Length: 311
View 1 (cartoon, rainbow, N blue to C red):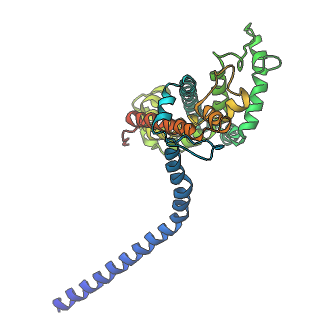
View 2: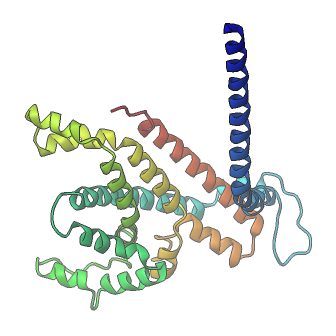
């Protein structure tokens, strides 16, 4: 009798294992089917484009020329001796640091404020997120008016404090901070939502235990909120750096790269090379170099913010 029971039990277990295997196979196939359109799109329009751009960077590829001679690494040699490239790199790095630091700070403080148990918090969440819905053209025109030396609201407000008018977009010392301020106002809404999600994921019992031990609000923020938001901070800063290194619309609309070349960014310079001079090969070298710089900055961020956090 015991032998029969064992055999029956073994057969049932084998059937369950077979059923689970078929089920997992079906789930895997369903996942691959849903992923297939994205993978195909990504392969055609991203991977293929990257490979093509890298290949073009080794040629003197001009649109108006029927022949594109191979030049090896000459485009990269020219790039490293191109003083306009270094101006654009410096401007882009300064803009990215100012914008990412400012956006992260404003977004975090806004998220902390609107997650407090106060009446109207939902309304303020919507209000603070609204600039994110505007296009770069609208944002650029709004801030050109706000920063104007003739009728700008910002200079008008500064006049009450005895501060003389500042030529925000016409002075090489203030143009990058002005573009950064514009971008912070425009773009902090989405990181704010990410921080709200991160704050809601922190267990309440940690705050309660700290309050019992006598921790005040500042200590709760410094020793519980900030450390446990490290993964969220990593996501916000990495995506912010990638986005701001590719800034183009703001200098294109608000300053056209001026004054002089004080607001030239790498992508703006790439636009000038590719679509004004039609030097696609050299432009591809600029794009590849920018990708390398972005990768270095991203790795540095993972190095300092990528540690695991355990509750």
